[in-house]
Image 1 (tube, rainbow, N blue to C red):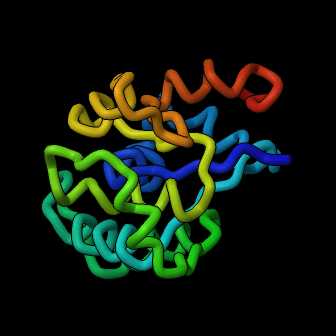
Image 2 (cartoon, rainbow, N blue to C red):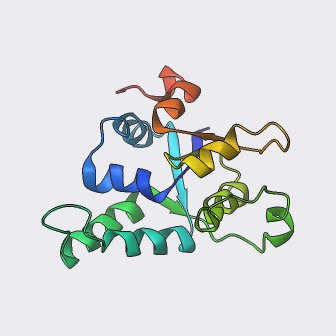
Length: 154
């Protein structure tokens, strides 16, 4: 069974725009069907909004933004979360409220890993008081956690 991953917006940008070497093993694992990426409407909407920011010079034009979203949709399986308010109440609150949606998606999608470089999310992953049903990891940690067999081209 493939590992179930939720990527935060910055990891998506590293995948789609910047071709960050740290994300390449995750891309290879998805291509090899050793992992699957999950996304929902809220996380996709944030990605679309951030793609319009001046991320680099020259900024991404509308066609490049659309191509990035199409690539995301081609990779990620869309999750239509049921009403998860009761389940989400069991989650700790992220100190950055804009990041709470990634925790909620990981919970609703029964993810194995929430892959992020965001300090506020990573701090929650290190908490011992209220363990999460998924792990929060950087891209590099995700590769180590899932093991070499999940990343044949890594």
